[in-house]
Image 1 (cartoon, rainbow over the protein chains, first blue to last red):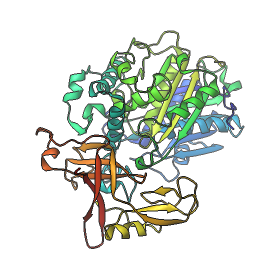
Image 2: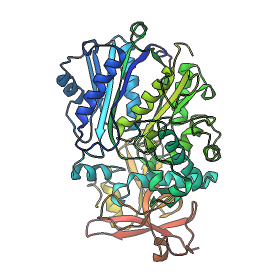
Image 3: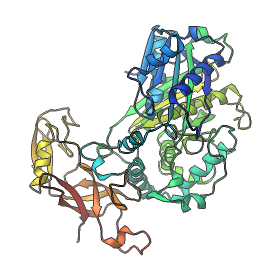
Image 4: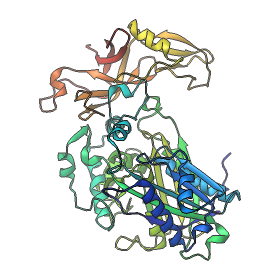
Length: 392
Length: 139
């Protein structure tokens, strides 16, 4: 039985992004510490006010107990530490767990801080191991297909089922660049055309190189605190109004459907908790590791009818000034994709929009945001609903 | 790359492939069929299975011509596929294709599309390892 026990119990009161992109010589743990300190400062808090720490164990610089290692280097002895190590959705599920720990009274102020240096920080062995890590070790990895090929299988099935075209997929990448051009920190801010996407090297058809997200360094952090503590801090609180998850399988060969994902139940659960509908959203952040993923999420989260997202994105609807701007920071396709921490940029962007401080790209009167993250090969999904007001 | 070593729940599957048999797990509790094998039944969580030989026939659920593999150890391009076996389960494999189809610069005369019938081909990689690949089924 689902409950609404997390609705408006916790607010995001501090955020920070590090520099992102190609950062030669960068170290994931230094970036994580920088993001953490900056988010605490943004909240107007001191490090000693933090009594919970949730981190991601970076591929490029892991510790056995990463959150504890971060606490150690900051002189913290938190009541609560947790390290997550799996995919993109976990970044949001970690936020939900932090919120649940606060709501349960286990601690009162948690920083979620994550960084990785996939562009500059991996040894050759780490890079090879990461490339080869997609799929079941006995039944899928033997073919040597990269993660893009697994997503290409989904894309092909989806295109065949609904008549979606490569041009429509490319429109997602074009839109991401248009958004990134308005974000001063984004990694890829140059304009892009559909023709350029289609002319880029084929990785695994129908996915071209420019249908694939970036490889980046970077990190971000956010501070969550209890409702009664959130009111009188430096920043206006952004309330966590809803959270939902959906998990259908791990390995693609076990997928019940290649064209409908667990984003369906994830989104429904989050909206039910918040008491909102997709149509109420002002700000939307989706997990755009590959262009077709945005189409699937637009449909499965209830923004488009099944099969209608291709025409929707091709009309410019998700671009700046469109009917439903998606990923106003540029997303994984154009802002940065530093691995699992990258979903946090979607979250910090949503908070920035709800605060009304997204200079140069502000969505007017933004009050409600839906952000979605996923991991595996469309396997694991998490949706959050954020609001400027405590009641939606 | 060779697959990871068999686990107790998969030894029989790999042994079947050596005999050029594609085996399905049949749940002793609910009768559901699954492939590839897993330690538990995805339908009812049952943990006991019998083995059933698959016909080796199926249809393409999806396909992609992979131009860039995870390492230089794999020849590209190759066609990664998801095959829906006639008996129900879906497995990931690669499709053996006429050479012309593997070169995207050549006119494509052989039709690969979602739904086309395929059949299993047992590829002996060594004296101890056989892997299940597929080819288009000639009508």
